[in-house]
Amino acid sequence: MNNTCSPIIFLGAGPGDPDLITVKGRRLLDEADVIVYAGSLVNPVLVDGVRAEIHDSAGMDLDGIMALMVKAARAGKKVVRLHTGDPAIYGAIREQMHRLDRENIACEVVPGVSSALAAAAAVKAELTVPELTQSVIFTRQAGRTPVPERESLQNLATIQASMCIFLSVSMMDQVVGELLAGGYPAATPVAVVEKATWPEERIVRGTLADIAGQVQASAIRKTAMILVGPALGENDEAASKLYDAGFSHEYRSGK
Ligand code: SAH
Image 1: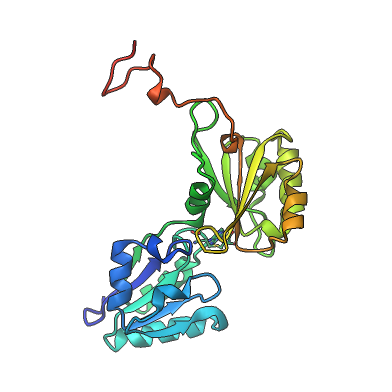
Image 2: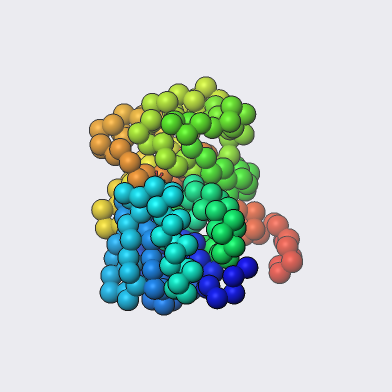
């Protein structure tokens, strides 16, 4: 490790609302000398007024981004690579970290609020409802980026868990087709949240039977999260066992 460089920070910006970055993330942005961020997804308000030199990675390729960050780190600058949501989810940080390894430059990852969780909050959903499902799947429809066949939406649908489907709203017909083919009933609730936590946030709710038409009509084409599964139901009676009077747990004995 090169001890003269500060580690390069891969930082989760959160879903959009600038108040939804962590306190640590806010401090790192304010202290940074160089910030590289994807202007297409990260809210630029986050970097308003910072003292750092700012680069939008939208028009840059991986080589260009890496060269810029390595040079700045070697010059003793504090570098922050700002990623939308949480960097661990479709953040493409692995390839960047491998390259930094080869250059002997240390890095750290600081988490952020993923858009999956921001979307769940927007529709006030609990994704893990006892008796309905206790699992959440983060996934995407195969598109230009392939998805291994064993985890196709159709295969994952057989589990009937809650699903947060990224990067797929432009392929809504295919998404619905695979989910139905995999065995979710047509009445399964779906919520599509566009630009969760941004001022222009929009929510479309329906079922697998009608959501594709609703998304088409709303003209939601990108930057949207698809939430699917029995837990998304609005009038669902399944109450958590944790608060059920007949259920004992560590802090209370049941009647
Ligand atoms: N690391 C990010 C995901 C990056 S992939 C995260 O944790 O959220 C980009 C995809 O994330 C988009 O296609 C969309 O599906 C979703 N996304 C990002 N920001 C969003 C937002 N504010 N509202 C809804 N979906 C969003």
